[in-house]
Image (cartoon, rainbow, N blue to C red; front, side, top):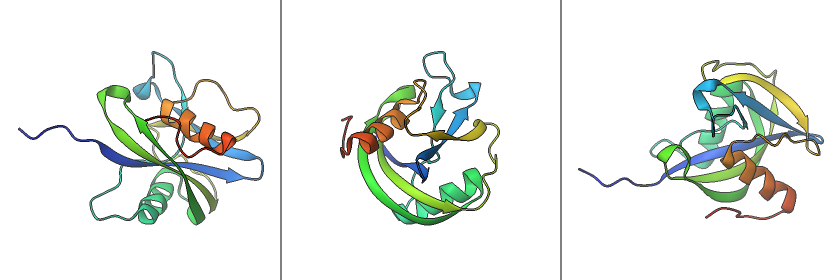
Length: 140
């Protein structure tokens, strides 16, 4: 049996002006028995670059095209008995937001950066905190 190893994912904070795109996760993804908000992003595939992962996830999750992106953080996430190293990015996109994964997301909404809800998935909370505090790492 092979040992459990950490996995790598991208967490993408889509920004437009003073707003960020947050998705409300379905009850399938309860965190501490509460529905929470998250951001687009999932695992990197083998031999996939970070940029390819960002573009693929944005297309698959919200049906948009990435204009540009920038890595802003690296954080650890241990939720759901996993171990992920999350590469946090800020991205600008073009296109109309679509709900393409209704099993995972109830809705997408633009939220004022000064009015971020408290019920955030831990990886999203770390990413937003890194962005707001201009820190590269919050969680090891």
